[in-house]
Image (cartoon, rainbow, N blue to C red; front, top):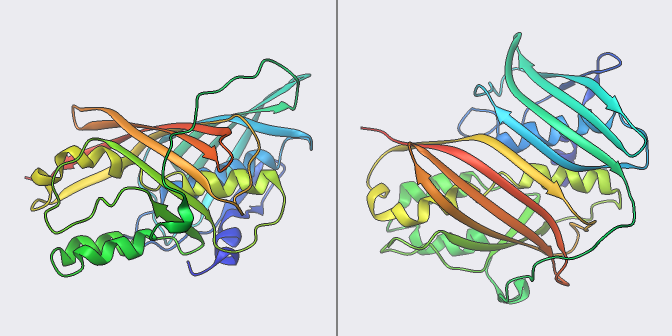
Amino acid sequence: MENLADLLAILKLEKTSETGFRGQNYITPWRIVFGGQVLGQSLHAAYETVPSGRFVHSLHGYFILPGNVDTPIDYEVDITRDGGSFNTRRVVAKQDGKTIFVAAFSFQLEQEGLDHQIYMPNVVSPEILMTDLEQLEDIKESHPMLYLRLSRLHPNPIEFRPVEQIFSKEMKKLAPFRHVWIRSREKLEQNIRLHHQVLAFASDYNLLGTALLPHRETLINQNYFIASLDHAMWFHRSYDLNNWILIAMDSPSACNSRALTRANIFSKDGKLVVSLAQEGLIRVMR
């Protein structure tokens, strides 16, 4: 995926029936469908069935089976409820008749109400930080396989600037906290539905990596498998991905081959715009 046009082409689905859609795949180096792609496409499908003026406020998805990048994905939307203020949708994603992902979405009219939020962390401004790819140069020679794996994961349409330099020759264990600034590399049109879909795509990066930080000394010389199990997002306020937003991540727990990660996302002026959580599978290969 080289540019924003490639990403938007992936997110846009072909309509196959009143509530049916088909999506093509981002061809990942690891040959399994990227979870963020399914999140973004499912949200696109759900949005196609709700009236204008309704905007997603929450989504909850479960990854059932790994998807095959060589096979298109069929999405079926269940119109669960259309109310005076809220619309509820359920989306099932299938390949070859097998369900690989299910999600529930809730949409709402914009309405006045109580307003409060937590404060944004006081971190370094993105303008003076290196990109994630520039940071990886520190391990290019000392950990070539890890460098190759991480650099191949990088989505070119999205720019990432991590606050913490977590990659080094020593690769010591770190506390499970991380902050990353992100934005679109190219101009994204002012359509909040589209910004929701692009952020859903991008939100699957870095989360499980945060859960690995306390275990790097153990994992650095071992093969391990990681995969997203579920994903939840709450959209609080509008935002603009043409400008920097900060993803503040933490991982409160890892046990029983699973790790929980959370994030609060802030606009550059300090507004809390999105919260998210993800549980993932992490298995060390014996």
